[in-house]
Amino acid sequence: MIYKILNFIKRIFGKRASVPAPTPIESPVVIVPPVATGEFKLFIPLKLYGLDFPTRRKKFDDAITYAESRLWSKEFKDWFMAFKFTQLGHFENKTNEELFYLLMRPVKSNYYVINGTIFNRGVIGYNQDDYNTEGGDIYTYAAHYDSFEILDLVDHLTHEWLCHGNNFSHAYRYSPERERSLPYAVGYFLGGIK
Image (tube, rainbow, N blue to C red):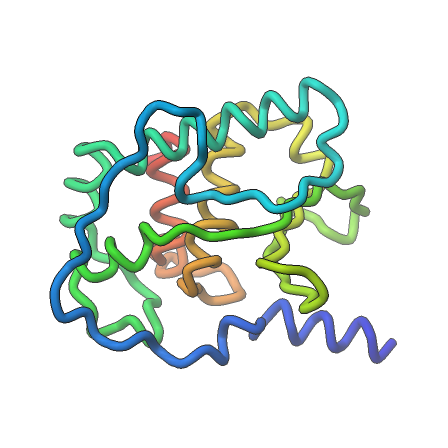
């Protein structure tokens, strides 16, 4: 029982919640988009679990490739610069330009497709660092993963991996403001929900 309580607390507050706010950006870093090498530049997978079926692995690769290409697009940057994000927490005083540069940092993570139960109603997956592996740990329930179209997976992976991996957060419970938090808004935009 104590293990479940500790995991619940970690899911709500997480390791990243206690990380101090980054120092202010004095001058923007010049971001150079990746060349067409097929190498991921923002989503850096360390170990992959549950992608042992060729269709699952192809879906994963296609989703990451699509997300990376959209993240480097002018359309995304223009949308991002004009959007009014909510629930920024310790990033509240940052400009959208500063938020953009904070978002576009590479994130190393392990990725797991796992079996779930009915208890996880509506939860697609989550980000939880188990502290025993290098990088973060992203979990997606297999039933959702297998039913997803590519854009659904792009939305989910961007939300969990890139946004949470770069310390952006949102409220635990649903609210209209949560939908405009950076993880949700960016995931929705890349997933085609505007």
